[in-house]
Length: 395
Image 1 (cartoon, rainbow, N blue to C red):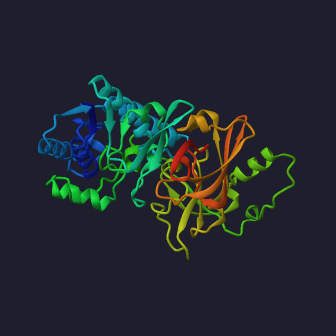
Image 2 (cartoon, rainbow, N blue to C red):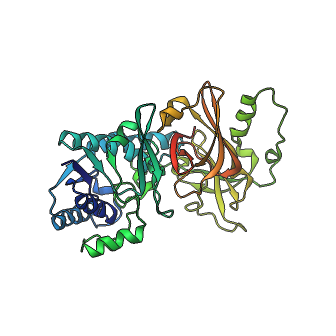
Image 3 (tube, one colour):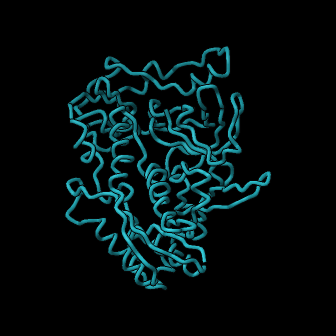
């Protein structure tokens, strides 16, 4: 009998995942990961991880499976929290959920599970895995979840073949309402529980306040740039090479304080991210202001009116070799090769047509249509059909 360790998070998805595996005849063990216990930054007096671990325990009891809690807060702090602080300090915007999957759930947690004699780990993610044989070797394909509203393949875009080999996604074939239905039929305490918000596993944390503990606030100017600014009329020059054109398409606009007018003050450029609208506290403009660029060197935030402001849009982005990841190593591009894909630069974004171009130093992703708020530090993931083939950090 194969042994599966399920990451029970206290939510409905992982509860149903555990139930389905048991029904399929696996020996199932529930493991709750405690990743955080600094209560000074959680938003309310409720203690989310305690509630969640209690719910996970009740589900395990109901299903008649063994249950234990592992404390991964050390690793979580080192690999996720510290990394996030560093990224924010550099003026980049990291994605904690993608990192948490790569570094915690499918690395630290997976290793613990294997040390407990597990054949597989399982999570409640809405995605699917399919194994094919190519040239005599097993290859694992990471596919979108059946529920188009809940597909979470993007969050798993950094997984490797080794990690996928050991992983099961039991709810990937189901729609969310079906998952809730199963939980109700089985009288699981999590059946009507709301989906968790906030940082992966940290519970209800307000990000700016959380960061402010480490990053000192320092006041700076909010500058508004007109959408008629000269630089937005840039014409494409004649290029001498493909690479030159790619560099041009992926380059961002650069701004100077003299390009616009001061419309307000902010507590620190590193607390803001491109495309952000809330938290600027500047009123009186005909259309709402959006962050179009942040400069942590001069501690300045550049903004523009309306979500169609030209400063928000770009057609291409670059990923350096160190931050490039292929889930399907066998499809990896060589220098000067290109590949037609569909891609997204954030979770929940509809997939858009794009072309990958490999160069010596990394890879360009060129979209057919201009994309809004391409943000350094975030992940771009690319697909062929319903399969996620690779991803990288936007540089």
